[in-house]
Length: 190
Ligand SMILES: *[C@@H]1O[C@H](CO)[C@@H](O)[C@H](O)[C@H]1NC(C)=O
Ligand SMILES: *[C@@H]1O[C@H](CO)[C@@H](O)[C@H](O)[C@H]1NC(C)=O
Ligand SMILES: *[C@@H]1O[C@H](CO)[C@@H](O)[C@H](O)[C@H]1NC(C)=O
Ligand SMILES: *[C@@H]1O[C@H](CO)[C@@H](O)[C@H](O)[C@H]1NC(C)=O
Image (cartoon, protein in one colour):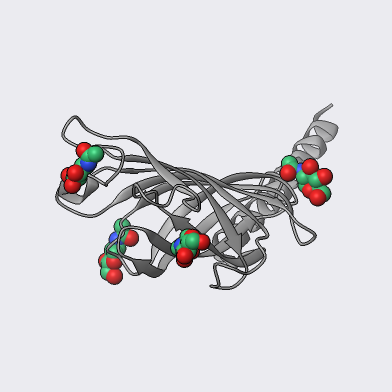
């Protein structure tokens, strides 16, 4: 009676230890590896409606504080303005390059003292290169040369993806046009 019990106990120990070891190594591996599984660079172009360019504007102020209006961005760093956009995405920095998709969503200017916004949008792709969407959300402190926002998910070619996108303002023309460079680093790829 005593011997088999001891034997079972020994095997239990071995099993426990080996599974402990197997558990620990992937965790350590996961912590160390910080290389993206996919990296993509895009540009998107925002032409803001200014009362005169209804034809080629790609974005519009849809909400503003009581002291503002929906034609011109409000004072105090545009605080409170909500802008909806449907912008072309290109692979280079040329507005007139064939678009590979649309950047669709909104930004909210959310601080009086500093020029900063909150972004929530999707890249909707319907091109030979990419099909599906990548969804983005996060704070965009516009005065910083580069800003990281979260890639919170995706569909199609980007099913269940997650990662970080580094934004930089590639060009800025008054309050009518800006172009963002988006360096998408995906850390979960399926
Ligand atoms: C908007 O369209 C007008 C007329 O076609 C053009 O002159 C202007 O350059 C366009 N604006 C931008 C930012 O492309
Ligand atoms: C909108 O606000 C801007 C800036 O405050 C002002 O210059 C402009 O006259 C306003 N436009 C209208 C239509 O109220
Ligand atoms: C995607 O492109 C195809 C081919 O041009 C078109 O038939 C389809 O309607 C497009 N889908 C969307 C969601 O735009
Ligand atoms: C902005 O940039 C500065 C310096 O380049 C950095 O210390 C800071 O963390 C950045 N802020 C954000 C929110 O990215």
